[in-house]
Length: 462
Length: 104
Image (cartoon, each protein chain N blue to C red):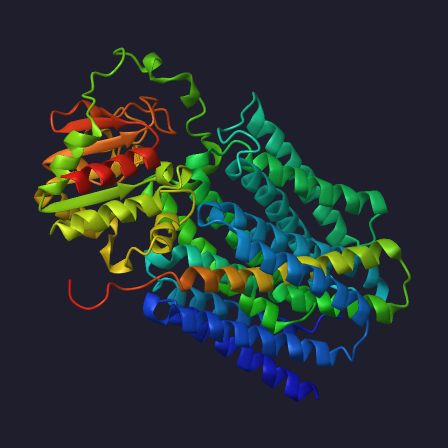
């Protein structure tokens, strides 16, 4: 029996890895997801059979609730809200790992406890709880229940350090005594980890969310892998390691795309002063040229090549379908339309790609930064929709700028740049964007969706 | 007692899985990074298997504690949310990705 289950796990693991491999192209990605699904079904069936139905009412109850909630959320969630959704899923995985450790702690007293279990138990409890609480804060920030700006206070690092120190102290105590802590000790450990998760995400601002979500994803993977050591399951170890690797790759990619070391993202409280408007940066209000939808429509309609540069503003305004409608009108007139996507546009890796895919934009029209930048010098118009810092030429040539060195989309190299913006408020990071003052740039103020709809109507009327 | 040989086996599996993970995931194009994240959400939903084991262990231990039972069921619930929600939302996203049809 046990051999059959080991074989089932082996098949499941092969399906997970092959399924992830198939995600290397949009053409095969769906098959990959289904292979992983099949792997999951096989693995869970094996576990259920192995358990001989022990505790089945509790298991069935949990699966029923979780299944209904999970599928309902998956069907209902808006594509613009995908970062929040993934944050919650990260939190769910971390929370489950912490709960498993907690139950295991009370069940595996005495002979069943050893050093390996004690170490893995306490680590998965801590990392899982940090991921759980951190993900909840990330969710609240993304959902705009709480401010997306960094929350800072004096002595923040000292407080965080003290909490971390207490947790580590309790963890050592736990391991040395093989889990024979007083109840308050374990409770303090868990509580401390939850508090640390909250404190850790609070000072990180909205625009840095792609990094945080990736990092929490990786934490959850690590927590699951460690849980595998705790309950002696290679299945959990392998799946956790795969997810941990994925989260780590994305974390590194995101912080590289911002040209900031991870420590700066996590502890720099980037943009903390940003809310106080740009005037403080000196130089007074920027001199910009405002334009009208009709003028821009003419410019677009008689262009050969237009590059759309979407940002978080497009997501907020839910403007992706309007953008696609505009592109259709332009393509009907023989204009070549491309989309240039910065790696950190939006609030999670690949956020813009999903929104545009939802609006039926073919994925082969979406260009990465490396492929997009050579296109700008030959583009007639760069249409910037709700993106700011990722187009800021100061990153290229103003060493004193906080984003100096960050790779950007070279929209200023296009013959004309039209920036759709709600107002002259600075971007998230609170940094003035010299792009707006350039002679080839003009601003079209208003809600992104309303502006794009006006452009479409104006192009149609030409 | 710790079985060192077994521990090393598990560590070997861990190290190999990390390498495989880096190899496989680094080939995923940026355009699919969001579905990748939700798919990995589903895969770490394997923690559901751990939760099922822990429920069985709890029942087998003869400990009758409402608190622990609630915690174990909560673990199963969270794991199930990951598995079902993660795969479903990934499927929903991936079916939206399409190539431009023939020609230009």
